[in-house]
Length: 124
Image (cartoon, one colour):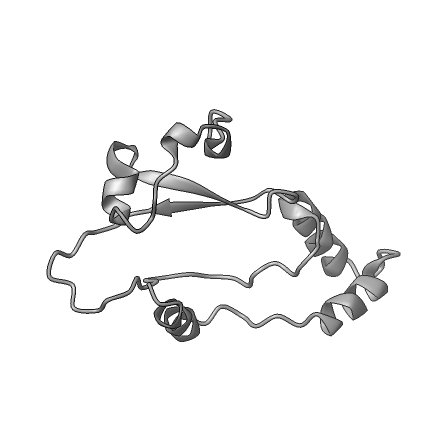
């Protein structure tokens, strides 16, 4: 979180996910920080935009998104930013090798339909 608080070190704040709704788990905070990949430090903010009591779809849905997902093993947010700088500069000494590496590890662009299908298939 913004103040450096890390929930993984405070089990008294852990939430058993099948006992609470996301709204109940987030409570007064209004959002949660999700740390993906402890080694690289990818942090995602999850915010409840709206609660629909008579929601007829039994799984979460993504309402919006943008951009491509970062390629694997790029070294976290700072490594990703550096890789983008290298890719944007064809005269950079690492441009060609990084471009080849990324081509071998092709990643799809953001696809809202696919994201929602994945959410549906996860069995939430």
